[in-house]
Image (cartoon, rainbow, N blue to C red; front, side, top):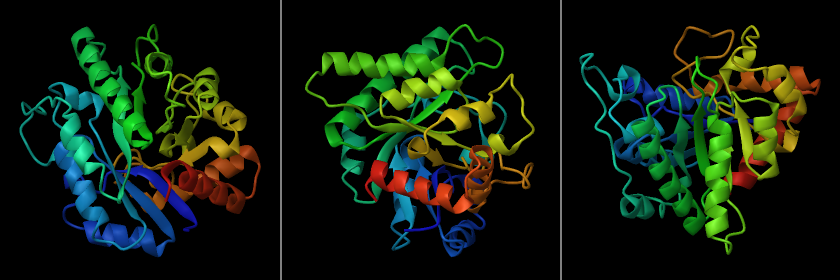
Length: 291
């Protein structure tokens, strides 16, 4: 097993087209493993393709991002160059297609899926919930954990996507009592202590990303308090590359090899040796993803 692991990155995105292999080699050379995460069918297939190019240390996660259930603003880093008017197609989750892709041994989870309240459009949220429930069903059927994407609305805190996510999972379990539970991880966690506790009580891990290394902004999240109270055995780490690079790389394109800075900050906050945190995170990833 490696020293570090990035359980959520997007080296499968267009922004890495010019130097993708060099980036992955840099990650592996730094004793780090990575999981490329799909956002829709094409990026999911790309994640699988990449995973098979390396004998060890590169895995794929496939699914439908909540934003891509509807037409959304064009992201050049994800989809490549395009005009400002270009929008994603608004994919309808095809359970049969994803079920087939999940048979690949390099695929370790389903997602990223969940709820994104950045734009509180009721019609869009209903589409997100429908696709999310279908991915919960597929997770239950296959035993693959969920890679959860959950995002608050920065201006309107009246609706909490973290608690809504928990409720949707609980609703599924109520209607499927034969199911022992739903495994997963909330990546790029930006909720509060109570949100974290709800997940941990359900057996869902929380993963921290670059913002924990920034100057504290309590309007976004009290990362110090949340990390202090999160059990080490429930913590994972991710970069969400190419977005939101940690210090001292802030403002640059993010890379999975930078995940060590996140481990370092967690160790500092919890007043633990970095090696202890790094080992725990890798052990947690091994347990959750079966790698």
